[in-house]
Length: 278
Image (tube, rainbow, N blue to C red):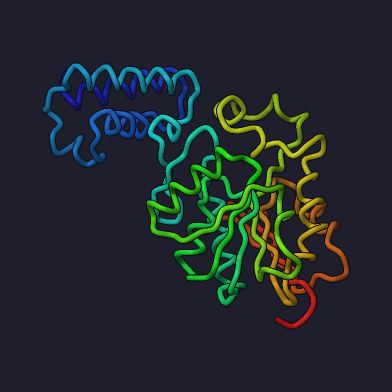
């Protein structure tokens, strides 16, 4: 079977199963089986698949048909122009979370010390370190997630300090200029309605906040003022329809509150500055 035939067959199987973007998915999985980049498939479309390559490709297609996300099959995901390693121990970085980084670069580029709370794969922490050169910390309750973040930081050349703790509990008072987080915000009672690829494969601790979905927001907003230096910023990714509730949690000590929408116009990022002069 040639690469072209394998692509056509894989695309057809994925399409019949209702998998999104079947052609692109087939390309990514076939390239992964061949350990090559996607353009190679078209430059060598008449090349015959080896037996081992065909076995790998078939297994990857089967895993995708069972609902396993493509990123967990290939072990990688692009974020802010860089390739990050991902495993089922970490949430897959989403394109919309890049707006968190964009907001941080806009309002807090001069921050000297930052912390990414619930850093997962380290996508935000590593990106901020490489884009700003600031000292960056990453916290997470998952030791397995911190291992993935450490590997990404090492591979991408980002000097990020990783700390196993709950939110910012291990940080000293007034020790950072920026607290940034993409926290869990899905309510537990909405679990059944979550897309299968997300519900069955991504880590629950990174998805579900509790009965209301606002539990992590509440706890982080309660402790962030303690660790922020005067004039420091808090930046949070917002869940769908969560803007008003999270805004209502902000106390009197927050200033310059702003909401940034994503490309779909959905309120995606909240930024607020703690009172005082930096």
